[in-house]
Image (cartoon, rainbow, N blue to C red; front, side):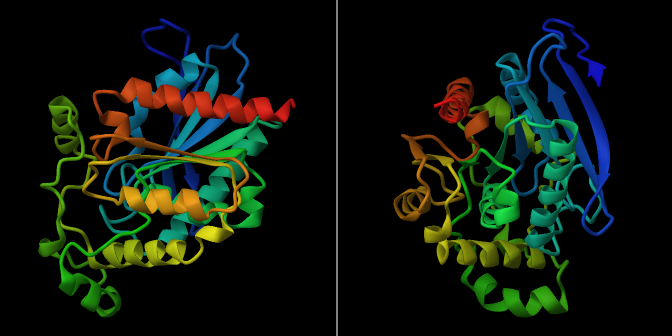
Length: 297
């Protein structure tokens, strides 16, 4: 790992590429606490649709300052990873790539507890991944921020034609389905940073990508009772991209013994980029610390 440039807290960071389930190159980042500090646990971050892992630098710094190591992966068609920008042939591919990354992390950090965080569509992918026993066994718990659990097409025609067009013209950009104008943060600087970032996809959603989101959302809604992993779900009540009531349904229906729901009044979609981002991060860190404390009871 490379020492943090400012050297203020001796953090270490690195970027690396791993081969995905289909031998596709996946761009990843890692941050570690200071060399002298003991790593208490690891959080793996799975970003949301159209963004990338590099946006979570501030959050990663908060985690490392509390003794947590951090890994983050750009999924297929996103950030620095292989694939057409904004195009996801299957979200199941992302699940498989997460499994591979978790295996690499466990090999490099034997015995260190691992958590998985997913935002928005990344949250849906993380939740589906946790339904597989061999992935569930690698995790102490999952954190979901604004998960895409009940997704409606931006335009009625999308839902009707997506199954057909996802086969005939999967990379076609459906302009009527672009949610670019919906605010995702109450912080103007955060919005500017997001939409001026060249690694953030701002074009219309591609048909196959949209169909995959509808498909995974439907699958999860029919399997909420099968969720057994410890989880924390966080959602803003004013979110206009994903449905906070679906997060409430997850909390009510999941079979998990340890589960926590946080609804933030008036907050928007990108919780870790809201003005109260530090408080959101503190809530996540506190939950992970409580899960780790249960191991010693």
